[in-house]
Image (cartoon, rainbow, N blue to C red; front, side):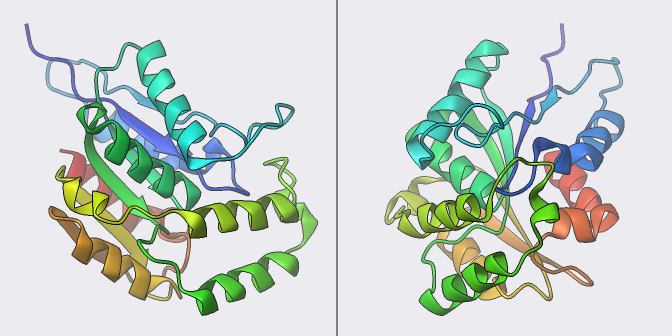
Length: 220
């Protein structure tokens, strides 16, 4: 009996909902289906602390623990984690804390060492963001600033060198955070960086076809 394909878990960013991954979930389910017809399990849960109507403390540790609980709940021994911004930082936290549960990582919008200038710029952009842009997620601008501060407080240090699973780092060629993506990829032992032309800070949303091709190729 053939082994089941390794599941894929998509982790959203603050200010966006798990729905941000709809195109990717569909691409994985359609393009990675094995010849025996076995479905590739792909899920996109809410991050702990960000689900509307369920206010709670937002922390990388708690969010990572919730991801591991989700794997247990679905009977997944391990999974490939795909994350964007805060979701990518949570994915790194899971890989550092529970390496046996992570078979691979696809990251965008994450960083190893946040730059003060870049953080200040992102906060200024959040403050001028129209409220309607956050309506679906139930988040507020304060929630986004809080998530940004949380990302900035992360210190993986030497743990990055201990994350030896295959890693794909994806960044838009026009993303102000591209230098951080390059730095992150250089510090992970088994990572490669892909830059997407025509995309900025949200490559999976701004260039979904190109992102999906990279994703499916990496996961396969």
